[in-house]
Image (cartoon, rainbow, N blue to C red):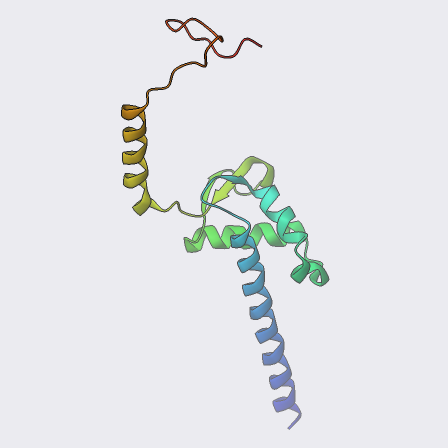
Length: 131
């Protein structure tokens, strides 16, 4: 009987650990974007999240979770992922939107070529604003 109660308590603890780990992963992924972000920034934002303040996890725990997310394919990494100041992560960019965005950019440049504002420089040699 004692073993059964110990087992149920242990399973409750592991269930809580899985829920907490899932919450940490959710917050980490939420603090990334389709653009590269420093791992230190993502971890700092996650550590300051209100829902995780009571956990008191160290930054190395968050770094280990980011490594796990990279290995699982949920995040893409660049640099030395073992050092948070020298690595960056991002969610995979939405590639299905790229062709339409590129097509619109080509249309804009064909319709309205970029000219320097009046008075900044001669039209044949534009070097930027006068300041």
